[in-house]
Amino acid sequence: MCRICFCSEDATEDQELFDQIGQEPPIDLGRLISPCKCKGSMKYVHLSCLNEWRKVTANSAHFQCDQCKYEYSFERTKWATFLRNSLLILTLTTVSFITLVFWSGFIAKLILRFCFHQSVIELFSLSPDDLDDDLDQLVLQVLTEPTLFDLFKINWVHWVLGISLVGLVGAMHSVAGLGIYRMTRRRIGLDNERAGGGVLLATILIGSLKALWTVFCEVKKFSIRSLDILESRILDIGDDDDPID
Image 1 (tube, rainbow, N blue to C red):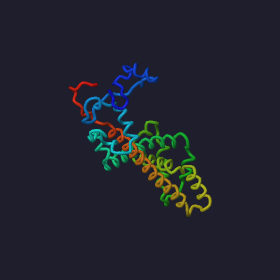
Image 2 (cartoon, one colour):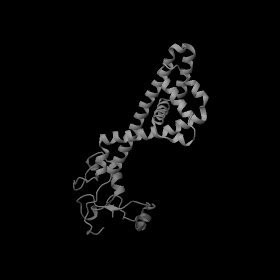
Image 3 (tube, rainbow, N blue to C red):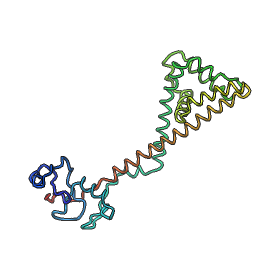
Image 4 (cartoon, rainbow, N blue to C red):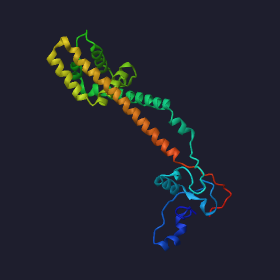
C-alpha cells in the first residue's frame, strides 16, 4: 500500500478503512511505484501522492526520499534534451513564422480580390518614380488574375502579400496605418507621397517583427510546458519480483 495515503493501487479495495474514518475513497490514485530504496511498508507510494508531497515540501524531500535519502531518478528523455536546445527553439520559431506567412498570403490575395477591388488600386496609385510603385504592380497583378485557381499560385507576390498581412495585423495598425496613409496623401500632395508609403512599409516591418517575437514566445512557452511534463515523471526503480504490500 501507499506509505502516504495508506491505500492500495485500487482505492476501492480499502472501502472498509474509509468507512471507519467516514470518508469516500478517491476514484483514481494512479499506480504504485517504488521510487527509492525503502523496504517493507515504506517501499511503495502512489505516483500522484508523491508528486503532491513534493509540491508542498520546501526541503530536500522535493528531490530525495526523506527516509533513506535516495535521490529520485527523474525521467529525462532525449526529448527533454532537445527541448532545451536554443537552436531548436529558433528553428521551430522560423518554421512557424514561415507557415504563418504562407497561409496569410492566401488570405491576403482573397481579401484583395473579392473585398477591395478598385479601391485598393486607388489606394496604392502612386507615381512611377516612387518606391511604392512596386506595391501598385503587386496589387494590380493580384486583381487582374484571370481565374480563382491563379490565386493559389505560390510566387513572390504570394510571400510579399503574406508578410504584409502578418505585419499589419501584428502591429494592430491596419486601420490606423491606412487612415494615416490616405490623410498624408491628401495633405502633402504628390511630391511627398513617398512619406505615406513609408508609414505603411514601416508599419508592416514593425508588425512583422512583433509577430515574429510573439511566435518565438509561444514556442518557448510550449517547450517549457513540455519540459515540466517530462521532468515531473519519476522512474520506478523497484524490483518487479517484490510483492506489493
